[in-house]
Image (cartoon, rainbow, N blue to C red; front, side, top):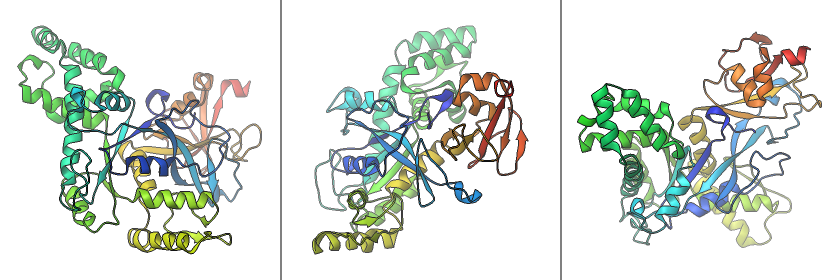
Length: 413
C-alpha cells in the first residue's frame, strides 16, 4: 500500500461540482495512465473511481542512482505515485434533501478525505449547470451552495437524538458523551475525533453545555466540522475564457484555496502524449512535439493553441497542481521512501528505491514500520535515514523525501 492516511487507510479525493463545469473532463484528464505500474495500491476500481497521480521530484537524482520503481513510476526524474480519485455525481441545490442525484453524490463524498471542487471560473453556467452568457453567473455562489449542501447533510445526520444526548451530557457534565455521540454518528463519513475536537476549538463552543447551544451554534459547529474533515480545493476551470481571470481573483479574496486550471487542455495533452505525438508528463509547463508528431495540421494547430493560451501564460494546465495541492497542502502529506539496504537504497531483491509512500506529516519512524508490516512495527529497534546516514528512534518525525531503512529484532535474528 503506497498511499496511506490515518491508521493506514488510503486517502481518497472526491472530484465534485455541478453539471457542465468540466468535472468529468478533469477526472478523465487526471486518470489517464501515463505508464504501466507493477503494483497498484487499489485492488478494485469501480466505474466512478480512477487512479490519478501525485507528482514529486524523485530522490534518485540526489543519490546519483538509477531507480527501479514498483508501486509508482519515474519519468525523467519525476516520481508519479498512484492515488485514488472518486468522480462524484453532479450536484444541484437541494441534494441533501435527495434532489437530483443528491443521495448518490452524498454517498460518494462520505468516503472522501478531501474534495476538489470543479468550478466554472468563466461564470458560463448557472447554478444548475445550464449554459449562460460568460460572466453572467457568480462562481462564488457555486462554492457557497456546495458548502451548504454538505453542512445540511451532516447536520441532518447529527441532529438525530441530539436533544437527548445534549441534555444528558449537560446534566452529568460529561463532554465525552457528546464526543462519543458525534463520533459514532459520523464514523461512516471519514470524520474522526480529532476533527470534532478541532471544530469545538474553532467555534469556541462548550462541549459541557451542548443543550444550551442555539440552532445557529449547532450549524456553526457542523459547518466547522465539515470544513475540517472534508477540506476543499477550488479548481477554477475554463481559464482560457476571458471572464475567468476576474472571478479567480474574487474567489481568492474570500480566502478560498484556488488553483486555476484547464481540464480540457490537460486531457488533450495527455491523449496526445499517449499517442506519442508529444513528450509530456502531467504537470509539465511545456511539451515537445515528437518526430512522429500529430497526424494533421489541424491537430498540430490545436496543440500549439494550448501552448499559447494555457501553458505559456499560466505555466501549466493546473490539473496536476490541483491534485498535488490537495495532498501536500490540504492533507499536509509528505513522501518517504522505505528501503531495506541503506547503502544500496534497495529492497531485498536489489531493486533501488522501489516504493514511495505518501504519509501524513507527523508520521514517526515506528508508524512507518507499522504501515509497511505489522510485525516490522512490533519488532522495531531503530531506523536509519539515508541522506545523513543517521540512526533515528521510534518517535522521530519523518521529513519529505526521507529514505528510511527499518532495523527490527526479526531482521537481526
